[in-house]
Image (cartoon, rainbow, N blue to C red; front, top):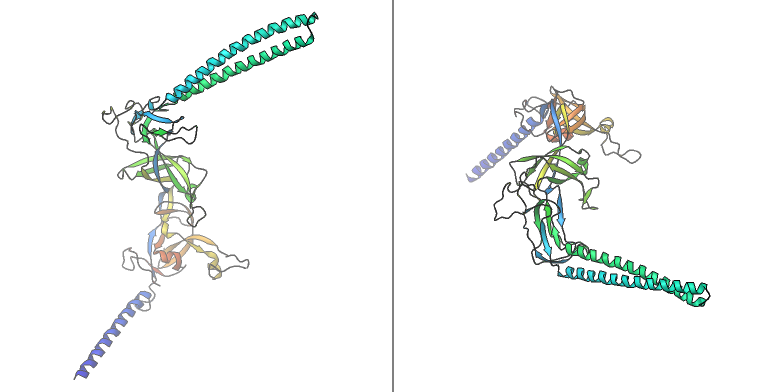
Length: 454
């Protein structure tokens, strides 16, 4: 009895497994067109080629910076004894920014003044010596001509006079030298006071009162602060070498900053670098970019230009106008540069355009087959596939500009054709001219992406 029941269970399991295999095979055969209506064709998506305006966009990223920014470094070393500004202060040209300890420089001025006085006294003495030597020379010359004194006395007087003249000339040069030293000492003293070279905002303050700073005459001086004109901002972005050829001066741009996600700013290209900025040079990750400068238009920081808030501002003193800057140096942003626009152009989705090797199609050989010279004989051209009834036709096209979605077709299509847009695997590899196809509507998918089968 138990043996009969076990045999029945095994037959039941075997029958169930067989039904499952037949069900899977049937579904696969239906999809592949082995039965159930004959050849159904390759399931594809399609869209009509239409005329539209296409604007080519180059996207890049960078950081905001003032168009004019001056680094303030001292010309002379010393200790900061006065620092009347703070970061964020608005200053006018000529405002005092810092003062260095000046005692040593005052002493240098006094020494230089003493040196000038000494040189002038020496000059007066040499002038008197010259006059005396001249008189002696004249007397000896007169006596020598009357043959009263020997020639040696006359020659000695002449030599003494020439030496006196030379010493007088040297004394004059010494006075000029000491006067130059005095002027230099006075300039060094004046450089202990650092003034604003232009009107702007203190956007960076690197020092505190009491610190010692190094002057630029000895080495690269200590950067004390930066004065920037926040009324006009710009971005410096890195544009890839393949895109920079499409960018031109004065191209318009749209800028979005991370700090202002709900607001966009208009910009314009003002400068394109001629030299590349190369990262990871010599490695497999080498990247070549060109710096491009984008000016932010319409001054988003209106009210922060010089003169509108007065001179040096203080947090404890309410400002008379303006407010916090909308854009601050260092803010990161994304830029879309509009490089070229094609109006009323025949356009197709970007994914509809692919590249096929016409040499392979002619010869029937694989694309990587080498010729007699050892080089691969390829004839790569851009094509689209047009749906005509239930079959696909390959059309060679010439393309133009492209945006994020559509590409311009300059030649090959007139507009109105039904262009196959997917799936990607079918367009890039599997579709062939004359191949049977069925669109999404025919397959009951209403335009949704259908898995490629053949």
